[in-house]
Image (tube, rainbow, N blue to C red; front, top):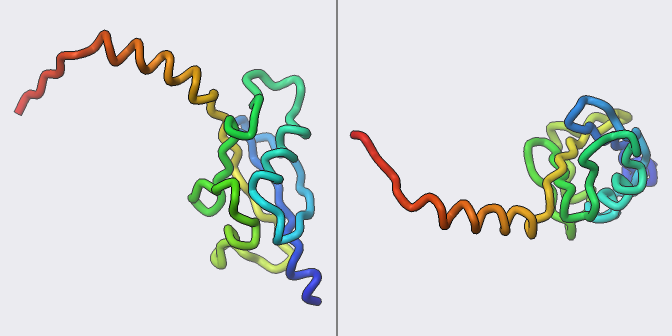
Length: 117
């Protein structure tokens, strides 16, 4: 019975509403491992797919999950239904290098701010 408790069935909901999974993972699985699994199973026909683990953000119970945490640590008691499937939302963000270049150019251009009270 304890072995069943240490397994979680998880599906990953993409931004367009489609799912990857469900698949069963041990509670000791890290979030980074889940992200690797998402990268491997990402639908090839979808545009703007993630390239690296840093491009993927996993959200469960309203919290962004950190790579070094395990699934068991991230489990929410409110969402934990025995025998149920846990849904984690997947958000794909472009790498910060691309953002940094765009943000640096925009910061140089806009220097004036108006405030009306």
